[in-house]
Image 1: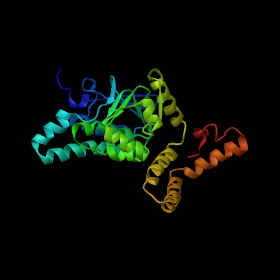
Image 2: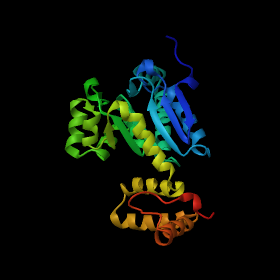
Image 3: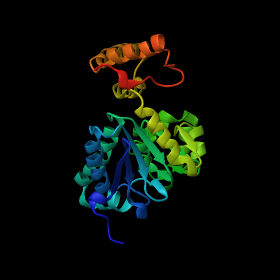
Image 4: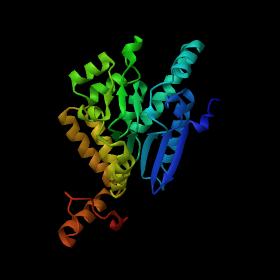
Length: 279
């Protein structure tokens, strides 16, 4: 089979304000090549500020989400060209993962199958991760005689309990979607037949919330992991003040009005009607 053109390595569909972005190398289990990494950055940057996109879902075509980095194209080919090519390929991968971590809009990883090695980078970058119960997660690097690089070791150290993270990295054994949920690697695992419906339900719920508040909240939570409690308190005060300039005061007043005056809004049961905010 001939190699896919660069623009065909990522598939995109926008429907009902949800951007479905898919790794599109199913014949390679959606391994990430330099071509795919370059195209993915183009795609997510183009979608980020579109008015018809409120949530981005990252999925995979075929039976895999992403089986990691392409050994032939990402490693062997670049190493043959020299250190400059290796560094360039790394930068192309890390740049879109970082862009996704600090994306303007909510992001959901819909993990339908294999998620290995380098796949942990974009997995961590997404705000929410929903997996099929029979999906497979693995750091097989130890079996190749290398350590889990590309941020994978950092991902498991941040998301999993220490003992589980060390075992996962040292043993090279796979986790099912259900095990990944239990150990904190993903948000939730559901039967494969229900995966897309569950992701769509989460996306629809996010679309009902104030987008400026969502952005400020997700960025704040990520920043908190790097801060002391005192620094976090100060950061949150400044973040709330910044949110005010994006209509945060008006949003809060409208939510309060619906709760106290109209009795139409119960914060513990859902979001307020954001369409009534006075801009």
